Image (tube, rainbow over all chains, first blue to last red; front, side):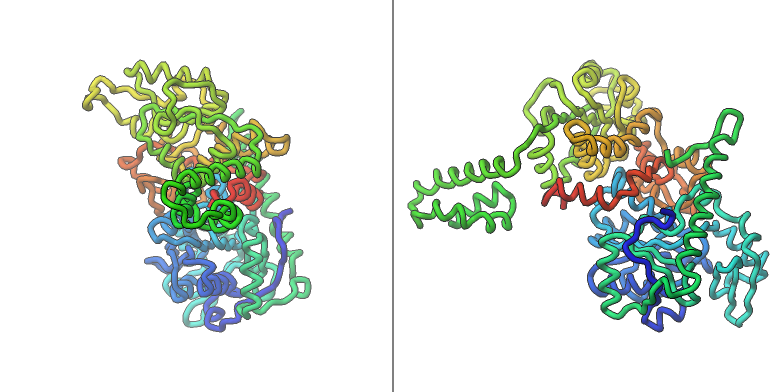
Length: 287
Length: 317
């Protein structure tokens, strides 16, 4: 069950060429929110919008397609999207909220819905939660160190960053490409990512990521009834090109392999934490 | 007819239900159309009685649990939050729980025996009545819930130094857990309406449900029981001490959203706590996905969500 419950898995990319121009992979998050926004399934979506420094995201409540487009592409650093969840329902007054987030943010969201201790009027207003695959995340200063020190590229010159095939890659405006082995980035990872037991956002309505499908495409897991409803309608309306996941390389096997790797590794971390001291250990949040 | 439907509207609070049920009933009652004024009133009352009887036949209530709201030194905000379930509150009171004690909503003066006591507010040590009643609450209830930040952690009453009119001697306020054993904490100021609703439903399942339901309710309530064992002190600092310092914070921002006084902002991907603003309600730590997280319970978010929607019927909306 490392991939969680899902109704369908599919290889997909957005039909909108504008979205694909600047999207990380298949533009699934941007396109699906666009469809949901245009068809009244959501009133707005919490996304990682542009911040005041390059590649430093700032969570925003996007209520227009333009705002969604501005948030395209992965920023390999923390965007506390959950911080706007009550703002979206209370201050913005949205009845149907969309949110995109990492697996841990999806966990936070579902906990907020089931245990709405400080989340008044949030539980029934979540219309579409899109999860993104995530192995680990970097604090902004960590990302800066990777890009500027290791990749020798100014943050403001970078137009895209990507992790894949064991490499961290930075692309610049002028066409230069700087690549380092992913191993060199490990020490900058956020410590709390090492206790995370979810790779493919098992608790999202729809989760997506690049792993498993060819460049320019995304792997999509449709998990819940809500997710299935939106996804089916969006595909029928022509918002996505899809391919059978079994027909593409490297396929779900790679996703399973990476998910298993992450979960096994992090379970060991949890065990090690529990016995870290002498007769004392660190807290395990899952028990 | 106009008066009849208006009366039904008042009693059912729902126009849709009225149109659905209207034909069957109006068939007999409007046999004398355009009745003179003295006639119509008794008929209306009769119609309402039929309506009541019908509901009882449709949904036989096996055995409701008894719930009481015990008011210590609090602002009644937690009770208002319970009432903020709107129709959901009626559904709970109709089908799952009798409100046997509640100074604001029920005409009962002394604490009775009850299954679940929802205690709001901290205990003022200088107020003999409060001290006596909190002990009485423990003796007479199966489950004591600290409802809200004041009962659980003291919340803003922690800042009291006495000297306020018209009881200047009232200066020491303690969370109820300092005087009695508390089974369950529901922090925040106030706790979300839906969270209180969930506690009531889960308590019902725990006390009246079948084995599976008991299992689910136990799994759901366990983290809140553990919270009650954790102690009677809370602060935004908990995020630093028990989450960040423990290497568990991944910067999701949930704490910032849950803070009722906006004392938490996300800076450099981590919560920054304005401790001057913090009222010590415990919402942030309780809501944090890295304080407690049960894959068994939260993993079933879809089916539990559906279950709650089903048992709440229309009132769940």
